[in-house]
Length: 379
Ligand SMILES: NC(=O)c1ccc[n+]([C@@H]2O[C@H](COP(=O)([O-])OP(=O)(O)OC[C@H]3O[C@@H](n4cnc5c(N)ncnc54)[C@H](O)[C@@H]3O)[C@@H](O)[C@H]2O)c1
Image (tube, rainbow, N blue to C red; front, side, top):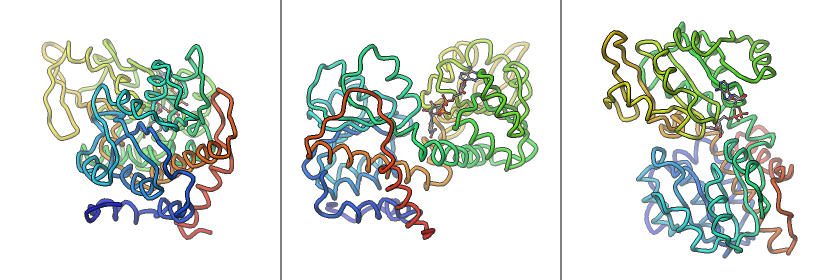
């Protein structure tokens, strides 16, 4: 338990939606997690610190590694360390977590699971992965020798966090960065999975004129019938005052695409990997100037002189800025902790899961949804 008063952000985020408090009550004092070693690779934010507070109460031993330095909050890390959590940042952070021989892994982007598989370790009973990008990465592995619960493809994360969480975060982040309302602005959203769709819908609600660029014909057709204009990348970039990338693929905007962007355009990535925007290519053709905590201007000179603006160093801006409503993130963290509990219960009852990517058990999602409904007083 904390040796000091929790910082005010803990109370504030908890009170937005006390779903993690509900989970804490549900787990009680005799949680299966007591004494279990957990390796957790995640965004080290203030909202994660709320979930960490609940985990500490269970008596689990928690070892955490940093998912993305751009999303790490120093006050959150300081507070979590004061609770007794082992937190590692920097390049070797996953190796340090694995040296504690965790029994359960909870991952964001499959970094920790990949490092564990490469290390040839044998301590892990089971794992979970929260992101689309992480699950895609695991599917490309030649061999997966442990069970991994796919939280991302469940009903809950796709419906709430990926759509509403990112959508509300994109709108909020853009307003904070530009100081402008979005009505009447031309916005291009690249990628129309649940993340791109949520962004497009929330931007449309703000009155923006949204064009969708999507390479999958089925998804493109869905975007059309959802009421969005479809565009080709070059013309959509040429007219966009705001560009949102949501593909999870590297180099979506690279060499020539930077030339296609309109003067003054604001570019925001919400895909998991920062390399969705090829900033190395951009730095070769434009000079970088920091113009705000989360904003860089890139100036082009010569005949095509112009400036474009990159949010959050290309990292997912809604996470780096903790923008939008925290409710969806609190719900997905509750699912993540409920999954840790589920795996631990199997471990203590000596039930074995086969090595595979497994659908998240409906009872885990239903538990989280019931706790969220209770926290919302919607029961
Ligand atoms: N920022 C956040 O808080 C947050 C939350 C959840 C997920 N994510 C991440 O967002 C990304 C997208 O998630 P998703 O679930 O929507 O993924 P998804 O794979 O379902 O959708 C991505 C879409 O992008 C399209 N696409 C890929 N390359 C393209 C290109 N060059 N041009 C046009 N379209 C292209 C694909 O056809 C696909 O339809 C992932 O990296 C995921 O991990 C971020």
